[in-house]
Structure formats: structure tokens, C-alpha cells
Amino acid sequence: MLEMAKRVAIIGSGASGLTAIKCCLDEGLQPVCFEKGTDIGGLWNFKEEALPGFASVYRSTVINTSKEMMCYSDFPIPKEYPNYMHHSWVIKYFRLYAHNFGLIKHIRFRHHVDHVKPREDFAQTRQWDFTYTDEVGNNVAHEKGTATTEVFDAVMVCIGHHVYPHYPRGSFEGIDDFQGKTLHSHDYKDHHGFENKRVVVIGIGNSGGDVAVELSRHAKQVYLSTRRGTWIINRVSDHGLPVDIVKARRAKSAIIGRLPVSLVRKLAHDELNKRFDHALYGLQPEHPYFGQHPMVNDDMPNRIITGSLVIKPNIKRFTKTGVVFDNDTVEEDIDAVVFATGYRFDFPFIDKSVMKVENNQVTLYKYVFPPKLDPPTLSIIGLVQPVGAIMPISEMQSRWATRVFNGTTKLPPQVVMCDNIRQKAVAMSRRYYQSPRHTIQVDYVPYMDELAEQIGVKPNFKSLMLSDPGLAMRCYFGPCTPYQYRLMGPGAWRGAKEAIETQWDRITHPTKTRPVPVAKSGGMPGILQLLILLVLVVAILFKLF
Image (tube, rainbow, N blue to C red):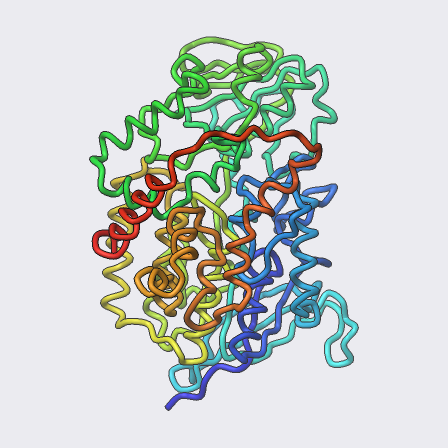
């Protein structure tokens, strides 16, 4: 029997790297985290200047997922924190998490990873040659700037997918003659320098929307250029609640899954167009809502209706001082162009014999394990684009990976893994339009459940209904918060039930800053409530599971 993994190298100390460290500790492994920067937080550690090789956010960045949906499953975000957090709150939470679980001592800062490759006797030892450069040089054995190779039993790659900007500047005719300023949104920090300018933003993802909206408050005029358009959802949903708290519910997913696809699309489009007509505002795409990663933006229609932001089609070519669009409209005297054209992901330090990235595609079993690597002692954590929060997904991936490393959980045969990968690729191509952006898409609840099944932590609602009906109802009909995956199975947390029962207090606390009288509604008769409850219980026990 092969010796179980002991030392685990973790690359990156951002949202994925921190939880990878903790999961290693939970499983009795010895993590050593390599962070090329000077601090934790990755993408969410704001820097005044964007640095090559580092993820970057702008000064005003606010996360798109609410705190109860994005927290790690055994560490609720404090009730005082806002539901949608500015990056300064996100990094503050990460520091609390790292301090609470003693993670910092396992991190080597200013250590750059150069090369990761299987040892020559990998089939027998499962081990890796891990070469890095120590930029600190405070270790007697390692001088500053010298490369060192250590041996590790397993590797977890946690660098995310916002490190390498996709900057197709050269693909636009006339761009070299354009006399204005050009930059990628990776390098954008705030509106300073754009005041009273005429600006074009290319790309209609979340970054493009945020940058265009922010600049529209300070620039003379902003044009947002898009090839396909987009569907826009608000952070604030029904009754002022976070949209993911309202939408990410098991009961809702079960109902939608039983309706005809055409009906679901119509209902979604009708709901999205209630706030503003996407066609009227020049935003409606040809593809349906579920065929694209949506934009989360609360302010764009307000900026469009005031004229400070104008939606334009794709750019045909640049002139020396302006832009010609596909519909042959021309805007002259353009001072700056921001390319919000997304990112490409890559792992240049991983030996090509292990895995390769081509056209933003990589072959991974459930987006975590290279299927042909045997034994499976390398995992990629956080390489997904969820319709939902990444933090609990990275945590679930790490819980699974560490149990595979220590031998308590097994992967299926290679042929099964490859077949699963093909099925996902086919499903992805049928649902989404072809784009480098749509190669790692996942839906939050189904993907979390899929991973949870691998390690035995998916909530068992039949047994939960019999043991604690109230909790079962909260979990099934309420928001699918990460705590549900700590109720049972390996890694169960005693505080999970309480966290679920108190989650609404944490949701409502930040906005209850002024006491107001609450009007009491008549409600429905108690007997009717009881009948509805009984019907739902029967449905859960005998129909849905």
C-alpha cells in the first residue's frame, strides 16, 4: 500500500489558498503555502498599483455575492458586516479566518514557484519536485533569489483565474494609429485621470459594467461597446434582500428543473425586463438568460437613462482620434479606451507532462483533478466561474482533495473521469455560446452538491426530516448557505445548525440601523399554514428525494 500524503505544497494564499491550508490541517496533513506576495488575500488584497502576475481589483470593487452565501462553511461572517462587502471588508474577513484557525504560520511569503513536476519515481512515491525562489532570504539554508527544490507528497494550486489579462489590443484595426490612451481593466484603479474625458469601455462582463458605470459619473461621456449584449441582475432583490439569498434555494431549483426549458426562459426574461427593458436599453443579447454568465450591476440602467453611458455595438476600427462601430456610427475625440476583455488562465509552473491549458480549456475531473495523473496527488482549486460564490466552492474542493490525498476518499477509474469530463463539455456547449469565458462555468447549488457527494457531506433530507423537521425545512426552502454542508458526514461542525437558525439575523442586522415600527399583517389562518406544511413534508419525503 502506498504511503499516504503528508506534506502538501499550496500555491497562493487568496480565497482558495487559505481554505486549502485549513482543510489540510483538518485532515492531518502538513501544509506549506507559497505566496509570492507579502500578504494574504490574493485578488481581494487591494494594491494602489496593478502588478504583473498578481490579480487586481479597483478601489471601489464590491463583491457580487452576499456574505451568507460566500462565507466559509464553519466560519460565519460577523453580523455587523454589510451583506455585499467592499473589498476592504472581504480582506478583513479573510484575516479573521486566518487568525481563528492559525493559518499564517503555514505561509511562506515572497516565495515564487518556478516549477512543479512529478519525481522520477512518482508511480511509487506519489511525490513532487517543487522548485521555488525565495525572495526574502531570511532562511540560513536559502539565500535571497536562489532557487530551491523540495519534495512534497501533494500539491494544491490556488492561484485563481484573474492573474493573466486577456488583452486583444492587436486584433482591432487601426489601434496602433490611435492617439488616445489604452489600458486593460486589470490596470484600472479609479476614475482619477479620466475626468472630463470621452471614454470607450470594451467588454460587458462584470468588470466592464463596473468601470463604465463608475467612469460615467466623472467623465464627459462614456461608451460601452459590446458584441453580444448581456442580461443584468441586481444585487438587491425582492423586499430588499440579497438576490442570491432569494434565488439560491433547493426548492426553487427543484421546481424549475421540472418545468419546460422554454417556460423557464420566458419567466426569467419577463422578470429581468420588469425593472428595465433590455432591448429598449440596447443590452438584450441574442442568447437566453441561461446561455451566458450574467452581469451583476445595480446602476447601469440609471446611467443609461441619464445619457452619461451609451451602449454601442462592437468596434469595427479605430481612427487616430476616434472609433468606428459595426453599425458605422462614429465617435470622435476619444481620449481613452479601457479593455474589459477578461482573463486567460494558465499554470506556467506546472510541468507540461501533467496538464496543459489550450484556448482557456484544461482537462480536469470535476474541475479539480487531472484525470490521467495516477496517483492523484495534484489538485486545482478555485478554477471555476460559478453563478454564485467561489469561497465555499473552493472550500468544498479542498475538503475533497485533501481526503483524496490522505486516502480516505477514492477517485473513480480514469475512463469514468474522462467520460464525466466529456459530458460536462457537451452540456456546456449546449447551454452557453462559445467563448473563452464559458469553459469553467458551474451553477452553485448543483456543483456544491456534486462535490459534497464525493465526500459524504451532502445533506440527507429524508433523515433530516425525521430527526429535525424544522431544520430540514429551513435548509430546503430557505437559502442554500454553506453551513448545510457541515451538518453531517466528515468534517461535521457542531455550530452548523445554529448558524443556519441565525442566518437571517446576520442578513437583516446591517440594514436595521434605525428603529421603525413594523406593521403586522393578518397572515393566513393557522390551520391553512399547517395543511401547507404537511403537503410540503409529504412532497419532500416521497416525491423530491
